[in-house]
Structure formats: structure tokens, C-alpha cells
Length: 252
Image (cartoon, rainbow, N blue to C red; front, side):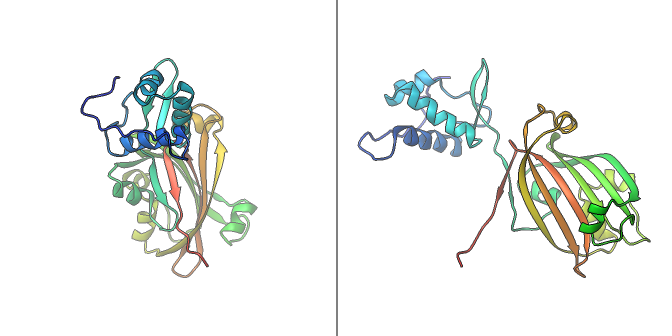
């Protein structure tokens, strides 16, 4: 790809205290954000960028490396550097179902039921759900999809009232587990979640179509009913290259 004559390119200021690589990074990022360089586009080579801005290839490489680390660009060995797909953004200050949040961003949510089990809770899960050890719970494992692409694996442990049950049919027809619970008369009030980075295991990598050891974001959470009773404990393994979480804080 060469520079288009119709493309608006900013310049770098050699008198600025800001390092050249940082200025160049900002220029390239601006082009991505205003769609001059669009998702999937091959960006110009290091040589072309260096000639255009009269900077060294070391400077160009550092700017590109930072954009790759931040998820705006992606490299393919032997092919070059491309504009990455925008990450799905999830604010951790809002309690939204996966399907609602995905639709809000203009994408199509989907899921594939991997397993549905009704079994006795192990001590660790029983403690989180504040129920007796060996109490009967529902365990739902699903593969999450966005625009038919595997994006995450959801494990949900549910302490439902004895008169309620789950079926494979409803879990296949309805993407949102929370919607299913609400249709059964359960009011969901709040959730508490933690986030950490982990490496994909063999089974996770196969389901998510990534290499073993690929970075994942593990979201662990507990969902409470309107009576402040924990009804769901979940573990969600999301692809680290496709998700970005945000938190808003106020100074105290």
C-alpha cells in the first residue's frame, strides 16, 4: 500500500519535546480513528512511512510496536501490519447482559450450548452461592459468539429454586441467560465482578480458535436477586484481543 493523495497526513514537529515516535504513533492512530486507514487495511511499509515523515525506521518501528501492543494494529508474519478490528468495549460499571451489550455496539450476539448439568455443588461453589455443600445446582457452559466468531466461554453456576429448571431448548433459542431467569420470575438486582488476565488452556484454545497460551480475560462474578440472594456465579473466558473493559472512578 502506498500513501493515497487523498489521505490527510499530519506532520511531526522536530522542535516539540514529544518524542518523534510518540508523535508518529498519534498520527497513525488518528488515521485509524477517522477511517482513513480502515479495519483490515495493510498499512504502508516502515520504509514508506519513514520516507513520508523523514524519520528513521527505528522510530517507525517503535510507533508501530506501541500501536500493536495497544490493539490498534496487528502484524502477520510475511504479510505486513494491518489495522486491527476494534475491540468490543465493556463498561464494568453497568450491569448488562452479553447479548444486550453486543447489540448496543452494533453486532450480532450468539451462543452455542456446550453442556447443561444438574448436579451437586462442590464446597467452593456452594460457599460462593451461600448454599449448603452438595446442594443441587445448574451448571451451564456456552460458547459466546459475536457475528458468528467465537469470542468467549461462559460457565454459569445457578442456585435456582427447586420448582425451576433449565432446558437445552431454551438455552439454545435464547442468547441471554439473564432473560431466561427473568422470564421465570427472578429479578436480578446487582453483580460483583473481578477481572484478571490468564493464558488459554488446551480446551479453551480449541473452542476459541486460538493458540494454547493465548491471552484471555477472565471475568468472575456473582449475580444477586432483588432479595440480595446470590443466584449465579460465573466465569467468563474472553479473548484478550477482542475485549476492552473500562471503569469510571470519582476522586474521593
